[in-house]
Image (tube, rainbow, N blue to C red):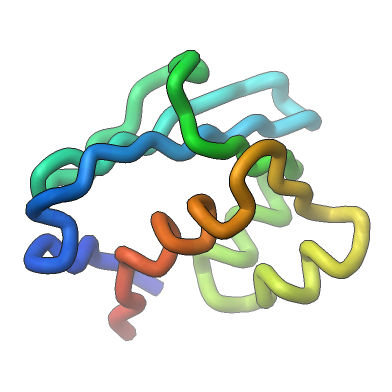
Length: 97
């Protein structure tokens, strides 16, 4: 499943969301700035929140095979920092089949 940034809704946005994968030790920062989304290696210090999970869990969520709410309710996904901000940033994307 593909996801596209709703650029028209993010023209005045500059926010960063971090991703940390416990199984691989990898970390990334998703930066949304003026309608453009860019992924950087590593965690930037000014992220509004960090999603902590394992790579297979995130891949299943991104593919639409698993719900983020179910992962949050269990032990498979945690949000460190601003939970509302993290969900807002993820809401800037729309899934396309």
